[in-house]
Image (cartoon, rainbow, N blue to C red; front, top):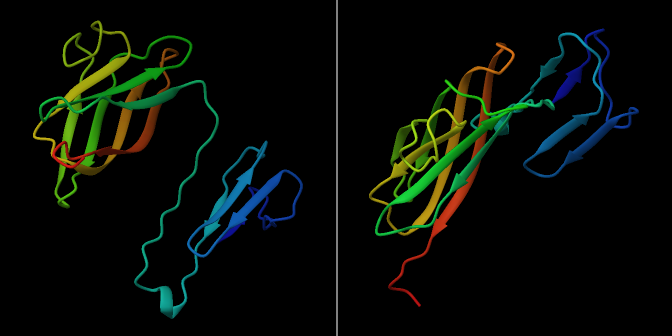
Length: 171
């Protein structure tokens, strides 16, 4: 990947304020105190990597956070909770979690802040849903939220985690 700052200059791994990491399957630029403006990233694939999936991820520090919490397996049911807050709980957001099950199937669940479904109180910034028919294995959970923060500014947030539920029949 090649990263360009808003003035069009290529970001070098040894530039001041740049932390660069890479291995066989990952390449990462972490830029502290980036200048304001529109940045550009170029991704080049050689013929050998033409069938490879590329994922570009960008993040910035913000007071608005989303945490995704996975409860314990209880008779085939697991509580999922997303907590949205900036300087106070963020309410009225649209929150979903995409679940990749051990068998490869996927399901999208809508999380709600209604005082039921495992969140404590209505409009407390805690969004919940019960994941049912949970079988032993590893699950990938990807949550997304959109709405307006407590200043009225629009936002989108993402959180991801893995959950492993062991087979109780296997010691």
